[in-house]
Length: 272
Ligand SMILES: C[S@@+](CC[C@H](N)C(=O)[O-])C[C@H]1O[C@@H](n2cnc3c(N)ncnc32)[C@H](O)[C@@H]1O
Image (cartoon, rainbow, N blue to C red):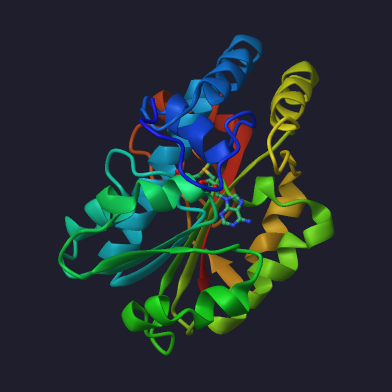
């Protein structure tokens, strides 16, 4: 449980960042987050499968990018420090890789020390990802990221917290236009396509109590985030295509596939 409530945090409103931390077994949540997450868990039995499936995709995609020569990462909507943070994962492949975390939740900023590697390779900036010019123009980001060189842009379990009115497709388009050819976009997104309608309604209802709400999107809508990139095959032997979070990068496809993990589409696309 959070030892103190940082300034700017309303302790009566659940936050997606703290609920996600709680679902992953973390301790940086408030009672209001745990009540909301427990309610969701009781209504969506496969919830934790989806959450862990997403986190697994995030880590496998980051490692895959490092293995393909990406040495600088922008982790948008990074979330609270957790096990195997992005820099922990990619440093196992490329110890000097630079990682900039971006989140707008004040608790992420207050508890960011585990995101800071201590060797100058990582930083956190507090910003709204829907303002790409401010994010990419941020001096701390620029001190670690050279935008003339390929980057790994991570947007996992983020854009379903952005309403259509904010045009998340245009947001992604601006980031993709700003990154160098040879960069990659790794993105996952909640969908209603593969889950019982009652469970989707439960998710939308519980998240309507947060500051953002949640917006499940169809396969076609998620596919459109990858405009301007060429998708890579999600696993050995697959065609380049959107996948589910459990399957991407999985070695044992049968074991990796689950109803919960079908709740999020994902892909990695290369900017040509
Ligand atoms: C479910 S967590 C995902 C964490 C991590 N990306 C992952 O997939 O494991 C979503 C994160 O996005 C952040 N977020 C949501 N909307 C945002 C926005 N407009 N700007 C910055 N961060 C945002 C939340 O604060 C939260 O930490």
